[in-house]
Image 1 (cartoon, helix red, strand yellow):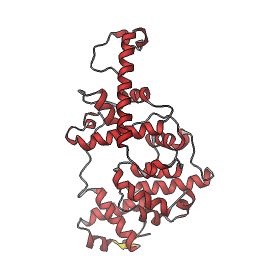
Image 2 (tube, rainbow, N blue to C red):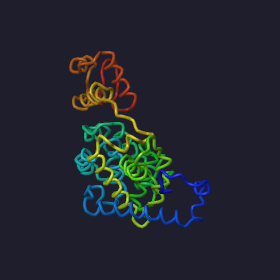
Image 3 (cartoon, rainbow, N blue to C red):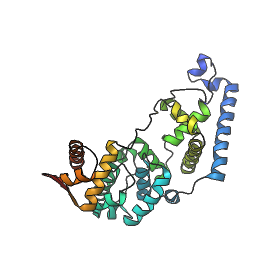
Image 4 (spheres, helix red, strand yellow):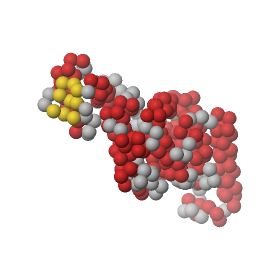
Amino acid sequence: MLVRNVALPSWIIKGRLFQHSNWIIVEVMESRTFKKKIWSFYRSRGRDLPWRRTQNPYRILVSEIMLQQTQVERVKTFYEKFIKRFPNFAALARAKRSEVLGVWQGLGYNRRALALHELAGIIMRKHGGKLPHERAALETLPGIGPYTAGAIRTFAFGEPEIFIETNIRRVFINFFFPNRKKVSDKEILPLIKKTLNHKDPRAWYFALMDYGAMIGATAKKKNPNRRSAHYARQSKFSGSDRELRGQILRLVLTKKEMKLDDLVAVIPQPRTRILRTATALAKEGFFKSKTGAFSL
């Protein structure tokens, strides 16, 4: 329902809104006003992003994996470089893991590169080099969860999927829950479904994301997402395990092999922490581990 902060009669809350024409008019008018504002913004200030110029499933998949927990501006440069080096599933599947990780370096969250590389192999072995269309099949692939599966189905295959991400969440909280805290995604998803453009879901989601990015850039102190029930402040990067993992991985990729003593000599962290982190990276498949050394 698109009416908020109003004490509604129980018969309306139970879903029989159609019995009262006045409420139907209010709902339709609010929905139209919302859509008009989003479309107007998109027509004048929509972003031109490289992955929006294609419906190639592989390229859209790469962009969606890269955009997980990473800002658009950072992804743009890496996306172009990655696609140039690995233009399709076959090229990515043939590549060495170290090569894929090397191209990914600087983007962060390196597990995504491993997942993408593994996914490419599965696509070539089990799906004839083509990304599956069905949601259930997509969600069985490494690195693809409910959101990414929905985004791929919409952006690559034109399916009117219902999904939510940071910018979309920000838009709906801003418009429909202006005075609420702890707004859950369960409350937002019906609104996304209600306002979805079934004729052109790609452009509609692009418009929502761009409007949400604008809100995030211009109202950082009053970011609507802080009123989401799912909001969590990102932990500090400096000194974190993420930073240490990145440092170790870069050194091993650059030198091809690093002894534990060499890692300790260049990374200002306790030996036990470096050993624990490097061992974990090896177990996850980033590189190999042998007594006192780590190598590709």
